[in-house]
Amino acid sequence: MFKDGSYVDWCEYFGDGFPGRDWGDGIIIDTKKNKSCIMYRVFRNKHKDFYWFEEQQLKLKEIE
Image (cartoon, helix red, strand yellow):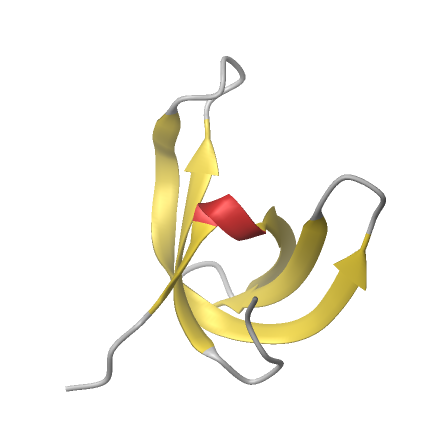
């Protein structure tokens, strides 16, 4: 589980569920819990927009 303000790598999936459609990094802005999963609203640096991701689409980014 991630916290608001966490810096993450994100990955969009193709329609068939395979990762790699698009990827980048961003900051978690909000969290929403559904019955089946946890969703995270991420500000995507690459696109300068907000997008909802499932937990398996995110990875905590290590700051060098």
